[in-house]
Image (cartoon, rainbow, N blue to C red; front, side, top):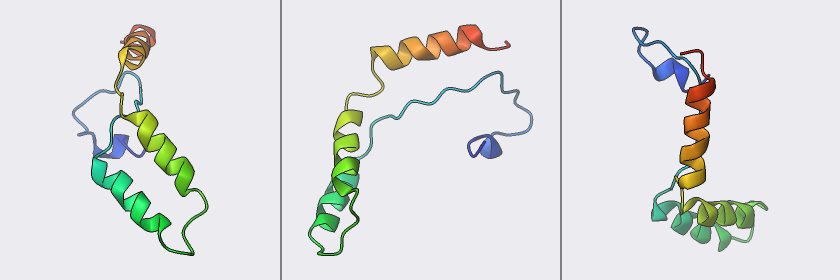
Length: 75
């Protein structure tokens, strides 16, 4: 629903699909910089791992899930 608020009202939304997608390298660098602080958030390693996993996205599986979402939409 957060994304829908940015879609112009003249559009019709038939379905929804979300792909994590690739993030800019600056995000990873920011996480690494944050790790240097003694009071850094405990989940930084998870965030870095998630960043690394996102490098290949969108991939073939993402595109197939998108095709399936379109097929299953009310369009």
